[in-house]
Image (tube, rainbow, N blue to C red; front, side, top):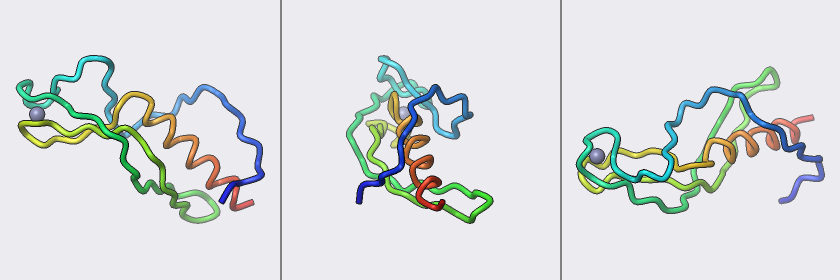
Length: 92
Ligand SMILES: [Zn+2]
C-alpha cells in the first residue's frame, strides 16, 4: 500500500539504537570476523501519543562471520526513521 502523504526529506537528528558501519566491514565486536551485509526486511515499532506504530522496512543488515553479531548497515537508520514517519502520518 502506498501512502498519499507527502514525505518530506529532512536530515534526521534522532539518536539511533542501531550501530552503523561505514566502509569498514570488519566486525567491531570480536575484531576477527567480517560483517556480511544483505537486505533484510525487519519490523520496527515506535510508541507515539497515538499508540504504537509498527512497520516493515528493508535495510542492509550485517552479520559477523565469526561471532554472529548483527548490526545495521549504512543508511539503515534513515530508512527506519522514514518508515516510522510514514507510519505516523498514516495514523492521522
Ligand atoms: Zn564478530
